[in-house]
Length: 190
Image (tube, rainbow, N blue to C red; front, side, top):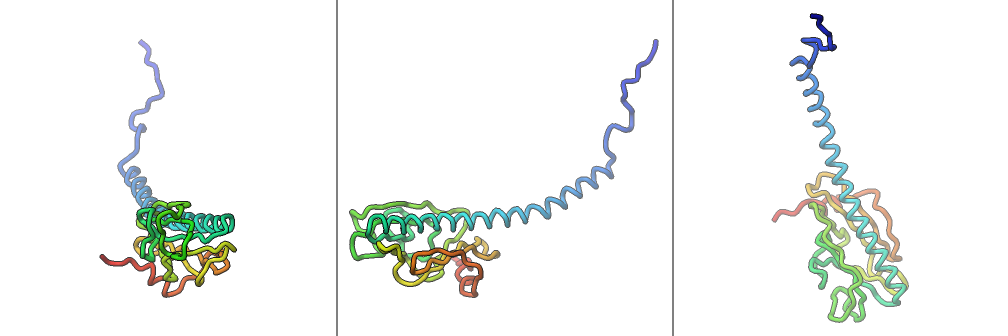
C-alpha cells in the first residue's frame, strides 16, 4: 500500500509560546497607545458637536428675528417651556418669539420656535460671559454685550471648544482661552 503526502507537516502547524507572547505584547502596546488617543478624539468631537448645535440655533434665532421682524430670545431650558436661570446650557435650550418686554422670560402664548435637547455625555456648555439669555432684534443684532460660549471637557482636562457672539449677531470661533475660561470649565463639586 502506497502512502500519500497531503502536505501536512507535523511540528509546523502553529505558533510557539514565545511568538504568541511577543504578538500579545505588541497588541497590548498598540491598544495602550491608541485607546487614550481615541477617547481624546471622541471627547473633542462631542464638544465640537455641542458648539455646532448651538451655532445652528443662534443662526436660526437671528434668521427668525429678521423674518418675523420681532425680538427672538434664546435661553437655557431644561423643560423646553420656561427659561432656566443657569449660565450652563448643556441641559438644553429653547428659542421663542418674544412678544412682550420681558426678554429673559417666556410668557404664555409666546410661540416656541425650537427646543434643543441636552448635549449629553458629560459635556458642559457654559456661557462664559454671564448671560442667562440672548435676544436678537429684528435687525439681526444681538442686544446687550458680546457673549462667549464654551463646550467644556467633563473632567476639565482638555481645552474647551468655544464661540464668540458679537453684538452685530456674528459668530466666530474662539482661538485662544484665558484663565477665566479655564475657571469656567473647571468641574463644579456637588
